[in-house]
Each structure stands twice: as structure tokens, then as C-alpha cells.
Image (tube, rainbow, N blue to C red; front, side, top):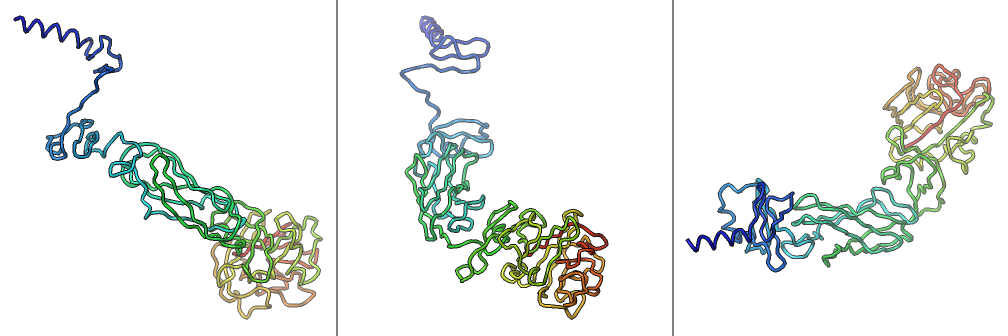
Length: 391
């Protein structure tokens, strides 16, 4: 009886129970808790067991907590499996989060003087054993660097993307050290920076550029021809289009004096707002494939023809209609359209280049009109502007 009395007194002194709450070491358990353990001299000790003992637990409940003596860490049951070790942060070792240096990859194209796009990244896998934050960075080399930060959302292999910033200053091979903050872990990766600009607008598009505007291109790379500016359409019909001809004839009287002017004019003023602009003579350098891929666009009408042909339209009259190698991709205008070719050298023919192969005397599509009364023809309409792109 005396032993029972002592037990009851001890229990009352150490445990407080009220409204379904239990307090150990406190008489005022936190209202949000079902169990509140309070001590400044002792810790909470969960059940300790080996891997084999843990795995022998029958039907473990989701959230069940144990201390694994084999791994030296706390684990919980996820509802389908035991979690990896918890609470060891980003320490190295078998139970910490660690870099997988064999997975490192540098992505994108790197050119001297070309600012980065979203495609200039480094990716690396991190083996995640603990939910934690991360900060993974590189050193700065040759004017640029890479970095990534965030929180691990899943356990196991996580691919982390480090975003590039800066602009390469020189053409060279750069070696970066990737550092995982708080762990002492490092990996290395090489990035090759090439010299010069892209060969055409399509190459800029393929390396991540998505904004219409003026770009510097260098079709022959290290060859003797210097780079030059051009206008790139990066948003229409798949992007990557180089503007090779632009004509605005608001009054209807703006004409082209001769064929040489149609081939080359105002080369230092590229853009869709330049009333007369042409780099047609450079189409062999600018095109990206064996055929000529063209986009004929009439902005005021909202009409576009997209096709390819193997025939160079500057060389003369084609032997066939449509032109050799003609392949239509998307044609808003089809009347008498057979590709693009040079009209016969006759002053009575109203345009230097035509898209009406079988009827140059009455062209439905005109590039380089030379008589003002005709205006710019677009199938059965007359309009005030025309653009020709190549890709």
C-alpha cells in the first residue's frame, strides 16, 4: 500500500494530464501538443535498434520513429519504406548529401563576347539522403560563373542546374571548380569558349536566343570576311530567320534602280523599319542547309509563304515551274506561286525577282519592283511592304 502511494505521488509530480495532453517535466504542456517533454539536463531517447530489428517490426505505422544503431541516425517510416538517415545536414559520408562528380555536364554554346542565355548551364547530380537546403557555386573564370541554391524536395538522385551569368572575355578552355557549401565537396568541369559570332540567326536561336532584333553574325567564322549586323526574327514560324530583303513603299513610288541594288542595299541599316534594305547576295553564306529555306511575309496583310527550294533565285530563270527542289511548308498565298526566281532581264518586266514563275510579265509576287505604278504585289493584292527571310 505504501509503495502504491509513493508511485502515485511520483506520477503526479512528473506527469500532468489534462484534456488528452501529457506533460513530462512540465505542468503546462503546450496546447498544440499531445505530448510535451521538458528538460534541460536530459534528452528524448527513441527506441534503438539494428537494421534487422527495424525490419522485423510488423506493419509499421506511417511516421513511426526509431534510432538506427547500424547507421547511427534517426529514421522514420514513410508508409511504404524506411527513410534515409535524418538530421545530419549536408555532411559528407554515406549518410550525408553528396555530389556525384561523374554526372557533371556543361550545356550550351560559349562564345567570346556573347552574353549567356538560359541554355548556358552546368548540371550535376546530388545524392540526397537528408532533406536540406543547398548552395552550389563555381568560381569565376574568364568573366563568368555558375550558381544554384534551393531546397531538396526528394530523396535519392537530384539533378541540380547551375545557371550561368556573365560574358566570356576570351576564347579558351576554362576549368571550373564546383563547390557544395557546408560539405567541403568539390568537382571540376571544363567549358570551351569559341572565338567569334554565330554564323546566322538560326544558330543564335539554337543556342537560346528568343528576341527579335539586331544580331552580329559571322558566316565564315575565322575566314577573311568580317562579321556584320543583321536582323533576326526569333518568334515566327519556328524562329531563327535572317532578314535578307525589306521594302516599304508607302507612297507606291519607291522603286529599285537596278538588280545590283536589289542584291545589296543599306547593308549597315538592317531592320524591318528600313524602307529599302537588301543582303540578298549573301544568301549562300547565311542559309543553314543545302536547300534555300525562305519565308516571304507581307506584314500589312498578315500573309506568309514558307517553303524551300534548291534553286538559287539570283542566278536567272529556272527551267521548270515550280523552281527546282520546291517544297511547300505553309502557303497563305497559292495563286501561281512556284518559288522565287530572277525575272528575265527586260525593262518591261515590273520586278527584278518574282514568285510567279510562269508569268513574270504579270507577277503576283514581287521582290524589287522597278515601276512605281505596280506597287508591291501579294497574290491578288497590292500592299505597302514586303519582307524576305532565309534560314
